[in-house]
Length: 389
Ligand SMILES: Nc1ncnc2c1ncn2[C@@H]1O[C@H](COP(=O)(O)OP(=O)(O)OP(=O)(O)O)[C@@H](O)[C@H]1O
Ligand SMILES: Nc1nc2c(ncn2[C@@H]2O[C@H](COP(=O)(O)O)[C@@H](O)[C@H]2O)c(=O)[nH]1
Image 1 (cartoon, rainbow, N blue to C red):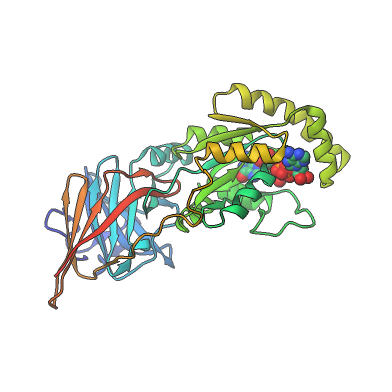
Image 2 (tube, rainbow, N blue to C red):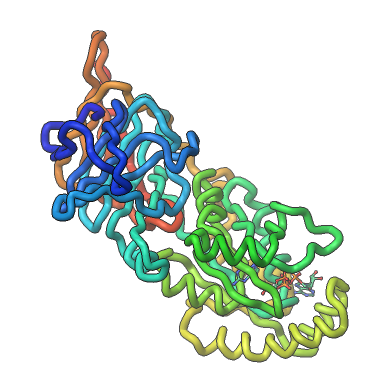
């Protein structure tokens, strides 16, 4: 077992069976925590993939080992981990000898999201959520009928604030338009592949829209948040409803056209759909606008008549005024020591360097303002070096 603070409960004994009758020895880098009747062993390799960190569960009552479905992109295996049980079914995992933008992780073993997914997938589930430093803002969900100008407004935001906003690249089974690039505009995919990935719990939401399958993978949201940017989702009303019902805490904005006639003109002028597809999108638009206005999903409804005016209103809703810092706020890099002890004091975790050498770091991890969590990332991490002596 890895080095563990004194208050860790470790009932692994001298090796254990993994539920499939195979005796497996705890690896040197593994760390375990005890929650109720279960031990969660964090470490080793997940499903033979050296890029993923494995999680195993030992049930004291049944004396069985199981490998849960691990959702979200977790930390890459490293030299060792410290782990502490937090409230709300979360385990704080600190990577040893790591840079601060990749050191703080949360393994959710019984959070709201995990409980939802467990019910949905009908199997044991845990989920990773990376801790992001600073006050990264909530993700933004933008919906509205096809052709209203969502993509245009999002492109304007990303152009003006390239380091502040990032786009969640959706998956779709529709064919690419001539200017669209795979993995930039969409992850263009096959229906059977996408259906399998949905079944495996890889999607935050999905919906059948205008005859094709569209969906937001958990990874797409994580990629944006990990880059320190605020994530924007361009999804239909059904998808927005699913996100609203999920534990992703987001801002919901609905864009309305000035009239159905104008919407039709924009769709035609864009020239990307056949006449039949335009008719289908217009038929769906009526129901979408009705739902957008009356469902209570959307906290903000904006009219896209004059583009510049609508863009100004959008920035207003997002709290961006003309003095907003274009490049976000810089946070000081702090490296987590290879050898350390971890002590929990309410919402503060003290990380104290141990081992050889004279200069010892003490780092305070303040979790009092954390928000968000899986799916996506845990924001509001405050990490401060208090002593280096
Ligand atoms: N305020 C506006 N006035 C006139 N034209 C606009 C306005 N906003 C966007 N457009 C144009 O309308 C067309 C549709 O816009 P856009 O592709 O951004 O819509 P969308 O809501 O993203 O559609 P979809 O949901 O199908 O992806 C584009 O050609 C765009 O240039
Ligand atoms: N529920 C979801 N809806 C999505 C997603 N990505 C896009 N969309 C919506 O689909 C329509 C049509 O898009 P188009 O690119 O074919 O014109 C539009 O309303 C988008 O908002 C998604 O991941 N989930």
